Length: 500
Image (tube, rainbow, N blue to C red; front, side, top):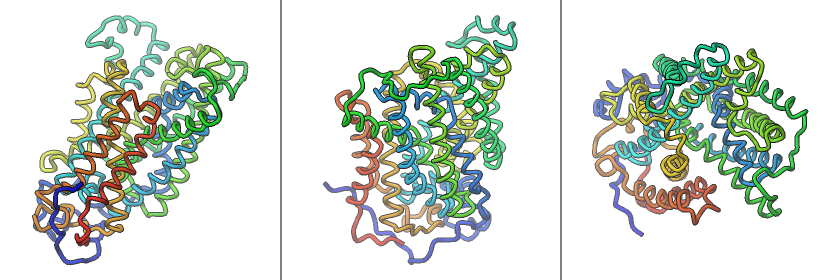
């Protein structure tokens, strides 16, 4: 199968420009750059990175420790896995994820540009708007949902400590009560404030929010274990009949890749953070310690809470807010609700808000800055009424599941282009040049070969993710998309094309 032709990349072969170049001198030195492709927020890294191993360790802590992360982990019981099988699947998924995070993380630290700009190498200076827009849509939807879930945790706290708040909970508007609107808008404003203060504030908030959730999760684990008389049955199959050995093995692998799919979006735009990394070593150490240690520890606590809650209520409770509401100690409710809501804001900012803000800025750099992109994200997250999206499983599975299925092909194409085709060679200044002779202009700014590869691979992964006949392999849509996207990308490229 043939793909549209792409012009030969031009220009003398030379090493990549130093990614620490100052934005002001950047525009002076490269007069062909223009505001269709550049603003200070999406410029190459300015000076040495400030994110060290500890910051990335806390980043992963914030990324994992959330209401959604707990619900996902405990939800794996519904597949028919028992406790130890669920923990094994989660742990295996995190080890595989470490490889993917290192690939994107190291690339981001090396080149020093946000994800959307990084994608210009593979898709062209204007074609990169395709992955940017897809990632932004997913981020906005999950940002709204996560904000709503955090607001419900705050609502529980308010009702428990102020009995008069119940009167506000009886008046409804657009599907939420007055109290729910107050809690939602309060958290909405807090997250917007964090982002508007820039990436250094995001780093500091992540450093605070990540450890905070451990207070809530450990307190919740102790409380649920106490309620269950400290009984844990790791061999119970809460999802039904125990599978056969081979059936269990397949389910464990499915759980592993489902874990990877759960974090596929943040991994795709991981360069937004690691471009600020102090060194390649700090990125590798931050990933190894942060992802594996934080992830597996959180998985253990989540599975323990799930098993213990089944002892008390008959089935694993997938909603930690429901468990918090059952606590009869006001002090514990206060600690748990504050910690959970803080952690929820943390995970929302780093996994969704930052990505969407950069992606919107990339769509129109002349008019949209990082802060304006954040404001757009915040407004859209309310406009889509996430409480209605979250309460409609068909909508979540169809829309978000279908769009998220496209993340695998994007990751495969971008990584294959950078590591295999280009062998990590990049002309950073050319990522900001709108000129037919520039390295990443291709055809009218779009690399139609990779767009074609993405279209074909994406169609396959969406069918796998959404068509009921493929339910048995739906959990493997991400690795299938990665392999298929990378393979088609390499197959379609012009063998005679020169890579600078």
